[in-house]
Image (cartoon, rainbow, N blue to C red; front, side):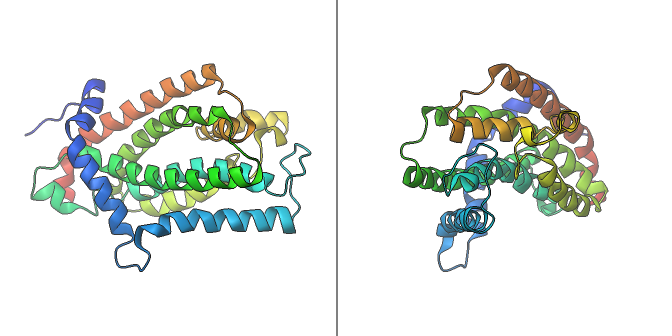
Length: 272
């Protein structure tokens, strides 16, 4: 029976070894999402633009919401909220599809030799593409309302890297579990919706009482969302100590996820 390496080195090497296939698969994934529509891939630009317009109107014009800073800018709440929402959507878009990756591609398991471990990376790459488009919309809106963005925007990829690594780890676990437990997909949809409201997307972490704030910071998405706002909107350099701890924890989760995936993939063909 074929054995699959689950080492930390193989986790990284497999992505690099299949980088050509990974790139082509991400491109196909992005284009396939809009195939048949009149505007095609331009929907990836119009969707975040529409979302940002709705947030700006609802929160600044109807609810007169502030972000607890006393700011008077009409678009402040919408831009701060959207900065966190972009980060959360990167995670949720990938996770919501993870449990169906193997089940939805049985031919990859049965008929051809395919590096199944790159499937979560394909979905993550597609989510990253949509995040980049959303970021362009966000930067244009910031330019209109405030002028040139802060130089700390350049730290944004550094903030996202641990989140991407963490998301891959969780995706490997869910992709495997989805083969053996078909109810996982139903649970994940509910869980990600709940997680959105349990993460500081619509409110700052500082808005919670001190005793509840500790629980909030146990949420693995909290550091990424808070640091994203710091570098994008508030013009603060990221807390590198927090970022370093977050990165180490994310690598550990990714390795555990990869280990689980590699150890269980031998049973995929039997179940499918």
